[in-house]
Length: 313
Image (cartoon, rainbow, N blue to C red; front, side, top):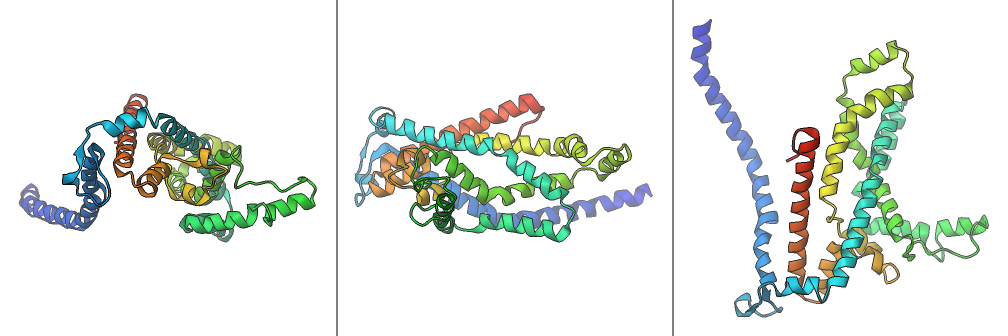
């Protein structure tokens, strides 16, 4: 038997190499796409070191070194500080409501009606695939000042004496956008926690039933600890991604009344680069965001290694 096993080893190794090569060839198009769309644009960082003007070749532009980086922290320091504040606050509020995804996944898992559970999951996941333009249209119908459904109902109930401007009130802009993001991503964000719940050993639940544990106690002592590692990893990744607020949401909800609260760094880069044609300064802003994000990512990875004993990346 040992001789036969030894004789099959070279053939098994060859099959393993062929299988690995097939997997590599399958992944190759995606690796090329990642390189083209994520790494090739990094060569554009060179524009941040030149006084580039549209229509003039880069070779004919003046090399200015760190001029625009100094401008970002001196002449434009107030604007940059405001934009960073908006980005960090909105990201922090998003992290603050992240337990809602866990709670929603647990509630879905505890639903006994199979068809009703699927209907709720599909209904709540659908907004994730709706464009932000349509999302704004939906919220405009409900929260518009003049003929919005919410204002009309509140006025008829006499809870308001005059219409309230939900979309143009800077005092509630951060909370309102957090609510919008939660509504759009609740069902989609719960999927990974449902997968984590499905991976919990079913024998633990059976043992809890034998011991006489009720539904709430079972959730608290089995389900929550079972998905906590997943929640911690996603939480740490969200913390490291705090400057990546996105662009579409704040672009469609942006207006003059809430401009001071909704101008995050991605929108600021767009406004500086495409609306004012200051490509050099917008490039420096993008570089700054990338460097800070990577620094935070590795810092969080180091913290995770100290706490959990293993790193995320």
